Image (tube, rainbow, N blue to C red; front, side):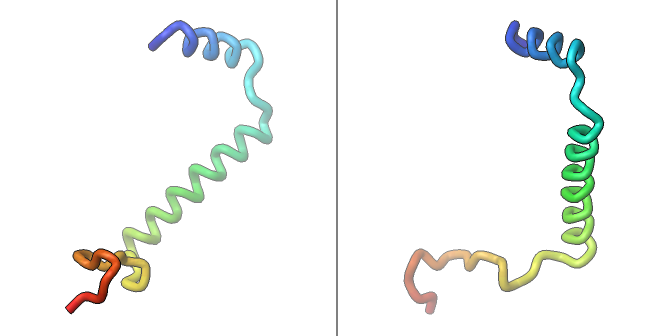
Length: 60
């Protein structure tokens, strides 16, 4: 950890984020976890899978 990160941590401790900012960050994290859970339970759609081996041309 360098000196800039320590100064940023000091400034953040003196002036913590607002409650709405904390809710926003927690909401984004919860949304990401929900997407991971859905992908794990349902699986990745075949239509969104990249074709392997095809390099811009028609595959035989």
